[in-house]
Length: 286
Image 1 (cartoon, one colour):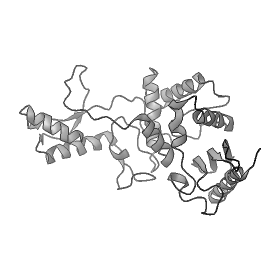
Image 2: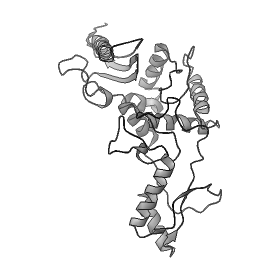
Image 3: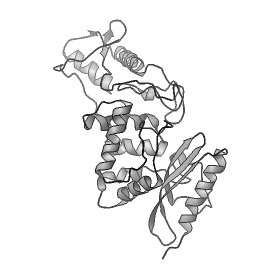
Image 4: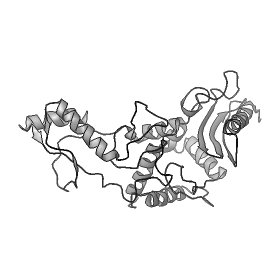
């Protein structure tokens, strides 16, 4: 869409030949996640297309381009050429002038929709982008460290329990990260409350057991949790967690957070977590 609008605007100006620069300076610090090159996440860049995926996948693991900004600029140049605009040479890194004229603009989906997609598919790339936007909004450096500080400050402003919490990144892939079951549960309570409609996408984005996102392949059809448990998964080697909401046998909505570490059987750990959430669904607490 941006290429189409740009090509049209250029032609209206009588311009059919351009040079193309790209500016990815909105983020700072290292772009490579501390885990190193990994199919779970691309280098964190303010400019990328399709999360720098090198295949046709839309979520999940995938091989990634090592230079997302360069790849995005080259893809954009190719789309301009397809629309009759000659692009001289290869796109080059540049800094956009503060008073640069605007040729075309495309806006993203609403923030709530991005939060929902991030949670449903456990999208690490969106998570890192959201953390950096939090840093930018707070006037912090848009880096791993700056984003961690901004996220912590945002949670503290909501008076959530942060004892022992560490935010080394936005995605949770860094093994220095620490969160408690209490923090997750309190956040889910706030997001579920009608007093906080601005947080509603935190709940609506949670995968539905047996149906959507990272829970689509879990919970058998006859499981009491299928369709009633909505939860975010957390998975690292040796770590399995599940936190979300469930409607119990009395029709009451509850929140839960189950966390394991030191696990040696990831499938067994996931099944145990699912069993726990299903047990809550079966609970008649009145």
